[in-house]
Amino acid sequence: MMVVYHFFVKRYGFTKYINHLKLKKTGQVCYNCVTKIEDEIDSDQEKPLLCKSCHREVHIQKLLNPHSNIFYQIKYLLLYRKFEKFVSIILYLVISFNIIGLVLNITKNCTVSQEFFSITSCLLLLIYWILMVFRVKVVMSGVN
Ligand SMILES: [Zn+2]
Image 1: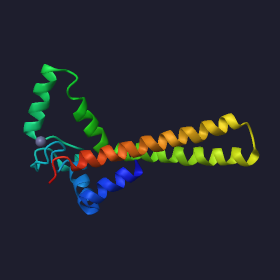
Image 2 (image 1 turned 90 degrees about the vertical axis):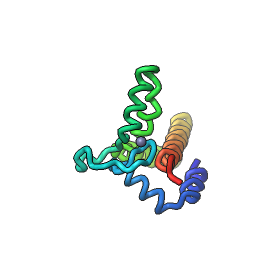
Image 3 (image 1 turned 45 degrees about the vertical axis):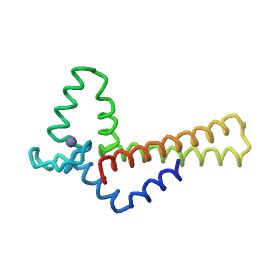
């Protein structure tokens, strides 16, 4: 997953990715269609926004199928500023689980819990990279 992430970022270009991440995160462009959002909302809010036409479309889709906007919600969450806090918590957990696993390995305590920590940290790391890959896809969607 890490390789896939680096492949994606490299393909789009790192600077381009960071620029679009910033634009979409702060609501300067629509996070669905990359249309520039005119200052209709006060800029200090700094959150991902949809342009008027995407907003309308989401509402129509929601009326037809109440669950259809889940993709927009996922996109929104991946760009929301608290997402960064969330992934850092995942990384902290991975690091602490690794340390705990290492300590258990050194002290030769029961191997079951040791395996539990290493499997959990691997799973968390996998989740982390899957989220990061999705984020690249979301950030670069609609960008040429
Ligand atoms: Zn839009």
